[in-house]
Length: 476
Image (cartoon, rainbow, N blue to C red; front, side):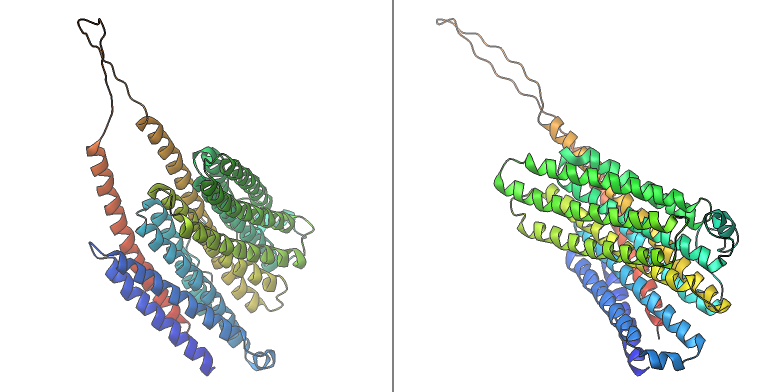
């Protein structure tokens, strides 16, 4: 127990440092150095959360068996909080990276994901204290009321409420993971260039629809098959986006550009394949004959998405490191894709926790234990869904930016001109003309708006970090 207290204390200190760094970064005119310090502080929160999780997971089975049921439940809850806190810290890192690239759309989406993940973690902890489900949601009814009857047609009549909710959570978690992976594939496709922007946009929209379907299922407002079907569509759209990224790579002019585009396409393919895996798990979990093994499969699928997303993040980082000949806009697009991949990793991490808790809930024999596990997996699933939605929104913004950049480039390359001339003696003449367009007023307005958005996001970073601090303190 001394080790648990030690790691919890480290997590709290790291979160406090993150809050302090974010406070500095939120000030008007904050330097890029202040932003990077916030990112580093967020990394420390993630590391501390992971260390706390490792310590909690290292408790010997024999020692755990000697504990009271309340103590074991508290440890399980603390592990869940640690996982979500780590995912939240990852989202904060994405916020800061987007801020340095002055990408307001990614900043907003990442900030929302971080805030909702933090809220979900707080909901998990409070559910243990109060003994009831307190997951904040604007649409979800209380689990066990309308949720169970809605899903009863897809399960046996003998299934307990906790088992029904476990099946639902497995589908929701898998769908959220598929949605996030599809968003990552979309973002990578958008970064590959205008040629893939349409497919990228379609994948982002499909990812958003999957997240919405998962939210409806979690609210008991739709059958589990709805989410599974949406997950499959998102995976299909992600596959098309990845193919478009490959095609775009083949059309690049130089060998260097082709190699860079190929690496981006590889990232899109990796994310698309992960989306397929998660969609298949959602389909299996939604089947009428679903069993504990299929629920375990949902957890494994979400875990694979987290791993694939982490690898995609590294691939895109390698591209950025080698993108010496890329334009600022191209680098920003790659950085945006990397941020979405990080959001996908965070989403899948939380989805894994939700699905793993569902496995335990499906076989729970104690009513008290079942109720607590239901509260935990509901909060975790809600966090995964909102994070997936944010990732999809960010991916759609990137696709829109790619299309807009292509349109602007096409417009900038056109112009009109006329000329005439006259001469004597030789009877020849010459003339020239040119045409161009510019809009300095529009540019000023855009910069002003971006700075305002950035400042608002920095302030939100501070708020998120404070929430993380509170979450870490709850581990004590």
